[in-house]
Length: 194
Image 1 (cartoon, rainbow, N blue to C red):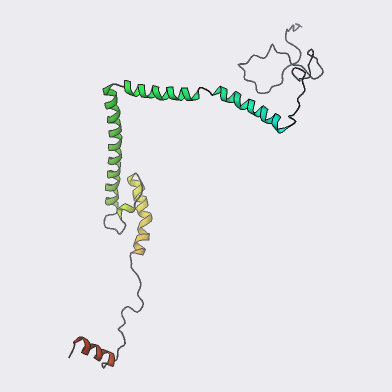
Image 2 (cartoon, rainbow, N blue to C red; image 1 turned 180 degrees about the vertical axis):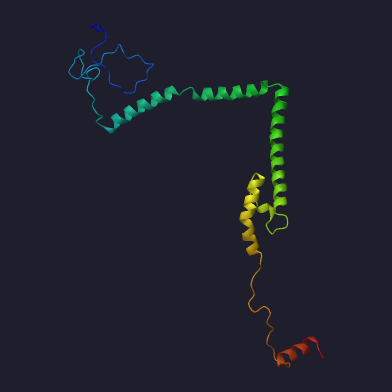
């Protein structure tokens, strides 16, 4: 039987999700009963925490913290100005060919957008040919999407296109066979008839 003569402490650290690239083998973990010299109870330098007694004390603590934070970001405006100047210099240092290439790329992108819209409009007009559905009502970016939307709209537009229903549309009005006094007066006034 071989004896295991290890230089490591007997206490093993619990698995607490420490990444494997950190080497924790040389560390010694103390338990509550072990002393590590003076102040081993975890209180730091031995001073106990006392909460601020007044609002002024709390304001002083908060003010000191705010000043430390402001000191960390004191050069933010300078860095922002430098970054803006760097961007301007970078743009100015582009060669004329680079500027033309950028302009060409932007123009090509715009042209592609126009071509896509024109193609969609052509497809829409072909799909709605000989129907009551307007081409401008169709939505989609491919012919299949436009066709599917047309199939959804077609029954709705066909039903709505019938027109209103007028009750008793074919009936003739019931008027007396002879002229009544109002008709005679109107004919005399406007000079029609006799």
